[in-house]
Length: 384
Image (cartoon, rainbow, N blue to C red):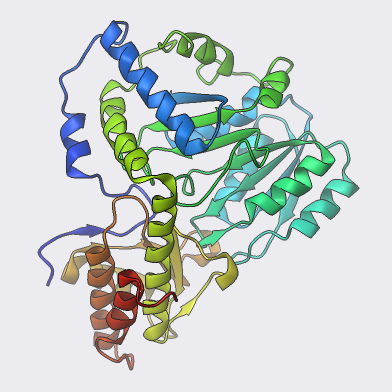
């Protein structure tokens, strides 16, 4: 039995010790010069991870709040929106748009598959008056990452705003906000930012600001305009989450020091190791392998194995928390997160525990094979 508890879910993710220490920094005046310096540094480093020279707004919020903010700030009731959905979180964003009166056109794909840019192109040709396209970059409910760059090329050719849910992808997977022409990009603190939940980050292009000037959906707390006005003088229109920003400052410094490319490569390596380890146990993956996520792996439960029982044994016998399926996949898959502050030993320990649990449940698993395969990938001796 493991003595260390591991949180192997796609968020909230583990928090590095130095960030935990920063969270305990004594409170400061959020209207004073010390706070202004804190916010200024954090925003500059947020622009770095978003790969943008435009505005990045920071809201005290869960990621879902950021998705709502994106909708209400650039759209008006009755506007047509194309929802490119590949899972539960894509469906949720479409639901938010409908709640505020948008006319949502569904462009949905089978869970476990990525969106086909050609299908998106056809949907936009059939609906030339679409105002915005909603895309989830990485869908944690299925472990699939969309080819956002290809989708962005299609959307730009037709002209609508491109709005991206990057809550679980930013920092873990390359996302070039400016170069790819993304207009609104939403990210969340509790993923690869490596801090606790409670902050949403939103990159806003000039085209999105132009749309904001005429948007008629109701908003107050989520209003981009006053947030931008205050942030230009290193303040916020209401009380910020000061201690989360202390932690964020530390995590962003570390991310920038290592470099974004190093972060992308590390997350990709972790994902390859988990997938290879699972397959070495004879397990099947849900995601199309060409679009497998750097952030989380969705594994199909073997025939006759209860997902709840498997996860319970992992948690109670080995101290490892994994995620279950969502919606129609609840009883079909379990998920292993590998983003943020996850280390190579964490991956090995998780696979070793999974091997043991599967053997206890009567599956013909070769002891040590998954760990050996994953270890080769993590060490760099093997690519996949």
